[in-house]
Length: 112
Length: 114
Image (tube, rainbow over all chains, first blue to last red; front, side, top):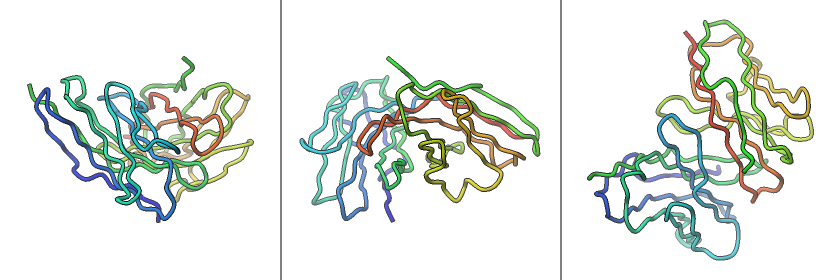
């Protein structure tokens, strides 16, 4: 079955530290991959997406993600965390029938 | 920038009542979706809609649920007889075309069933 696994339901970093949110997908065929962010009581905002081509994808707010087919991973990174990055982050993949399958989410906490 | 809108933002209803959640997708989009997020859990696919018919639905989308595009701009989700476990945030989404195209999400409707 197509699935998305996010390692770590909670990640805590200090302001200015590296952010690394992990995502792995299951598929024999490279899927389309997305990262969404959800701020408290708000909807889902697309951070970045991978479709084809360059495996390092840059998104909004300084985030980027690298598609690694050999590791079936699509980890999200940001060199320096900001307090405003505190939110829930969802890795997702395009699936058959054009729907999107979401991971369980990782809540990012940023300490001052 | 065009965006998906949803109304109402919050709705409280009594168990057994019917609710209709409304969405206005982005105007040139062809694929429409409803997703659900129970508090503290992940976002789950409910149904996709294309060319005026359901193209796919999940096991969550049982006979109590229905979708409609009544007038070419609105896209609605109806729950006929709400249950306590229907309490969740419901997101509408739309996509222009193609699997690689971005799916744009609305801000959600928070439904509370008492």
